[in-house]
Length: 270
View 1 (cartoon, helix red, strand yellow):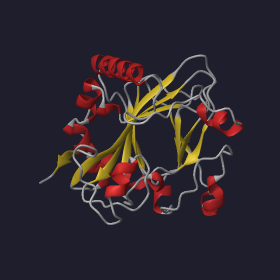
View 2 (cartoon, rainbow, N blue to C red; view 1 turned 120 degrees about the horizontal axis):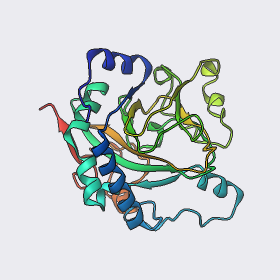
View 3 (tube, one colour; view 1 turned 90 degrees about the vertical axis):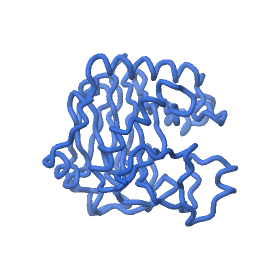
């Protein structure tokens, strides 16, 4: 893996709120990640989370049908697949996240497989951090392309620098690509930047950077493996997000989110 970040790359991330790392994985590593993803997805049998039975494609109302065809989203594969666990808990990834964000320690919030199937709908402009159970302007994600991510099949787009102006208000993800600008009209005139990537490349983005993705206009898949990172020391903000009912019942707003079984610390400067 190309895990060394230059001062220029860190400065670019801090300026734009995102960074693309070309050829992040070697061909052999890319094969390993693909095998791990395929095995983990097969084990889930469509279940979104390891401990819950939500299954995609079972709804029949128009909204659910639309969102089911944006992408397949499977969360916390590291919890029930040993190969994925080894990849996601890699200290080198945590160090990169720490260097980019300025955090001293990094915990996994959750991983996600995001798989755009053939002819999938676009992913509307959105923010990540407002969904999460903590509020930290440094939080970020890695997005690893396991297939070529192209203009045709759903590559990412970012609005550079938007993370400086967005807040923890959650405008959600709508069918309307530009719905987020109802919340942030001052950003409507900003230009977006496309981030096509070859398989094995990756990007990092701040959870408050506005981003989205094209529709998949091809008969092929666009697979990505992602992981959201929480700077160490964060506390529960009252939003359940991926937490189980049992975990939410145990927590009070302000409690530390430091459960190693749920949010392992994968890097610390200390």
